[in-house]
Amino acid sequence: MEEQYLWTIVCAVFVVILVGIAVRDRIQSRKRQITKLRQRWGKVPEQEYTSEELKSISHYAANHQNGRFMIDDITWNDLDLERIFLLLNNTCSSCGEEYLYAVLRLPEFREETLLERERLIEFFRGHQTEREMVQRGLLQVGKISGLSISDYIKALSEIPVRSRAKYFACFLLAVASIVCLLVKPAVGVSLLVAAVIVNISMHTMEANKIEVYLKCLMCLIRVLHASEKLGKEKIPELEEYLSRLRTNERKLHSVRKKSVTLVSAKGTEGDIAGVLYSYINSFFMLDFIQFYSILRVLRQNQQELETLTETLGILDTMIAVASYREYLPYYCIPKFSDQKHAAFMDVENLYHPLIANPVANSIRADGGILVTGSNASGKSTFLKNVAVNMILAQSIHTSLSSNYRASMCKVMTSMALRDDLQSGESYYIVEIRSLKRILEETGKDVPVLCIVDEVLRGTNTVERIAASSQVLAYLRRPSVICFAATHDIELSYILDRMYTNYHFEEEITEHDVRFNYLLKAGRATSRNAIALLELIGYDKGIVQAARASAEQFEKTGIWKEL
Image 1 (cartoon, rainbow, N blue to C red):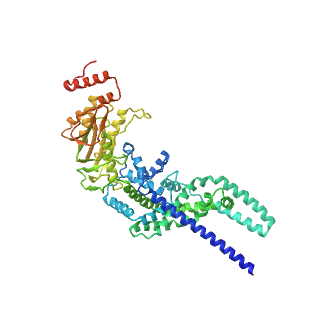
Image 2: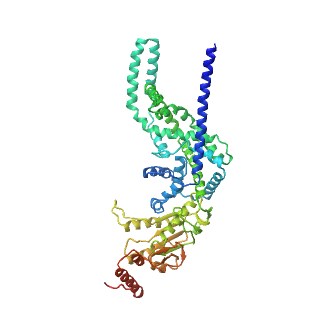
Image 3: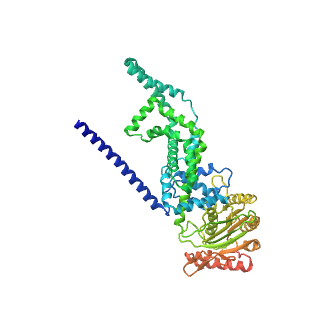
C-alpha cells in the first residue's frame, strides 16, 4: 500500500511539474509577444517583401473593388505608393496587411466611414492594454506567405465537391477488418491485408487532390482561432466588431472541430505523432472524409468567412495607422468639403512621407496650378506630395500637414512614364494614352485631382507647347484640380488667365547649386541647365557658347545657325 501511495505521489508531482512548465512557457511567450509589440510601436516596419508577395497582397483589393474607384497602376507607381504601404504596414496579420493595402488602393468618398476609422485609430492610440489584447489575437493569424487570404477563400470555393461514399466504404472496410481480426483471426488477417492494400493505394493515388488545399485550410483555421479569441474579449468601444466576430465564428465553429486532427497531422509531418497519424489517415481515409465535410460547411458560410477576415483586417489596419501617427513629426485630421462641382484644396505646411527632413509647403488650389522651375528644384516632388496627401486623407484620415481642407477627389497622375518595349509603343504614345485616361475621367460626377509632370515631353517643342496648352486648358474646369509642372515657360504665359503660376528656384554660387525647395508665387525666372554643365567640368568653350546662344534667342527669338 505504501508503495502504491508513493507512486501516486510521484505521478502527481510529475504532472504538476509538467503543468507548471507549460504555464511558465505560456507566460514567457506572452511577455515576449508584448515586448516585441511595444518595440514595434511607433517605429518603421522592418519586414521586407518580394514582388510576388506584394502582388499576392494586392489581390484582396482587386477582389473587393465592387465598382469603386481604384488607384490605377500608373498613379500607384508614379507616387511610389508601394513604399508608403510598407512604411505604414505595422500590421500583425495577413488580414491586416491585405486590408491596409486595399484602404490605400481604394480611397474613400464617404465621410462617415472615415470618421469611424478615426474613432478606432484614436481609441487604439490611447488604450495600450486593449490594443495589445487585440494584437495578441491577431498574431494567431500571423503573416502568411504564398497566396493572399482572399485567394485561399476563393481557391477553396472552387474545389469540386466529391461524394464521400467511396471513402466511407473504405472506412467501413477498415473497421470490419479489425472487428473480424478479433472475432475470426484467420479470416480477419486476409481481410486486413485487403483493406490495407485497397485503402492505402486509393489514398496514395488521390492524396494530391486535397494536399495542395490543406495550406489554404490551415490559414483559414488560424483566422477562426483568432476570431474566437478576440470574440471573447470585453472591450465596449469595439463591441460592434467583436460581436461580428462572435456571430460569424459560431457559424464556422464546426470547421475547427472537424479539422483539428486533419490540419495538425499535416502540420507535424516528420515527428512520431504526425507519421503515426498519417498512417491512420491513410488506412481509415479520415482526411478525405473530413476534408469534403469541411468543404461543404465553408461553401455554405463563405460570406461569414469573408466577414471574419475583413473585421480582423479593419482592426489590424487601424492599429497600424495609430502606430504610424506616433512616428510622424506632425499631422492633422483632414476636413472635407461637400461641394461636388467646385473642387478645391487648401493645405498648410504639407510634407512628403518618404523624405527625411522634408521641406514643408503650403498651397491653395481651386483650379489650375502651373509649377515651373529648373532641374532638381523640387517640382515633381511637390506634385507627388499633393497627390499622396490627398490619398492618405481619404484612406487613413491623416494628412501630413498642419491644416488640410479639400474636396474628395479621384487622384490620377501622369508622371514617371517610359517606352513600352513589349507593345513597341514609343514614349509619346504611352504619354498621350496616359493623359487620355485622365481626360476621360474628368467628365464624370466625382471631382478629380490630376497631376501632370512635363506635359507631352515626348515630342518636338512647337507641337508640345501647342498641344499641351490645349490639354491643360481642357482640364481647367470647376470639378478638376490640375497641378502641372513644366520647363516650357511659354505655357505660363499662354495659360496665365486659367492657371495660377508658382515656381521653385535655386541659388547658384561659384562652386555649387543650392535648392531650398520652397514654393514661391509667380513663374520661374532662372535656369540652371547651362550652369550645371559648368559646375561638373564641361569645356568652357561649350558653356560660353551655349550661354551666348540662349541669350541671343531670348533677345531676338531666332536661333543662330552654327
